[in-house]
Image (cartoon, rainbow, N blue to C red):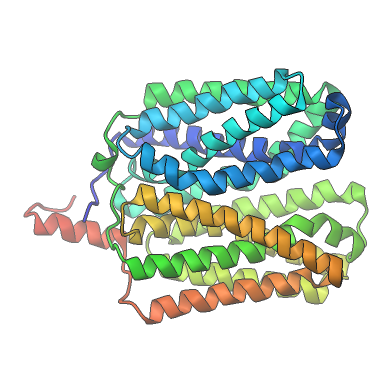
Length: 409
């Protein structure tokens, strides 16, 4: 069992964590930027908005299919250079996207950025976790996930605003500059150690059966959540009765609740990994059922949306942390599989939501989403019933120290 301590001092680890959380923010932002800049990019590139929208779809598909192969190809490369390369390639490709004269070149630039993101998600979780003591890694995962929560509600609106007052190309240049800064920080600050030497390279409780349950839970919960995430704007307008001008503030509310959720789950994740998963899924079911039952009321929709943002923000750190605990083939490969299935859930959720909207309307999307997340909750409960208690990583690390004949600090 590998539960080695942090590779760097706490202050340096915190600086790296902030930089990598910022990088997650930039990756998620640039992935979704075309959706906010549709009407600016389409006339400039002489393409219909539908083709600009495909830039987001193609991006997600590239991440889906490339995560595992890239993890295998880079399994022996120090994480310092993998993460720096990902941020650097993203910076170059995003600048290329900003300067491209044609739609075809933009597609290629987006594919290159998506490949960098796919590898980034594989490397960033175990690499970041390895900087911290075993009993603090859940908290670190929650802090890392704040970038995910802020990107849709801060990064994309800010990028859209900048594009509207200047041009969409300026927004991409700004992201490229910020990614370059992250690249420099990683090169300078991150320790250069082999992946196998990192404290989080191997799970303390490896279990193929638990990992299989976890992957099923991941697909189900993400499918359910992204059913409503994809159509939340339409739901808020068509069902709750909000106007288009209300949407940015409502999404900001959802994002703020998401940041709060990530902070709160970080306080419990290391000590209660199983409970964090079960409570997060249960809250998500309640939020979705509430949105379905009370979504035709503005007050009900607002409360439900905030609870949804809070609950769903716990999912990425909980899932990432659980991969670190139970992955049977090393955490890098485990994270690669998890990332691919997470993106599969995104595609499945948006597809199922679209089909439901076409057949019966957007009103029933939260109900379908709640059903999917409820299945995820049942799967997680079955996992807990059929396996020994997972325990605490902090306790496991102390036990290991005692077995080695040393005294715990």
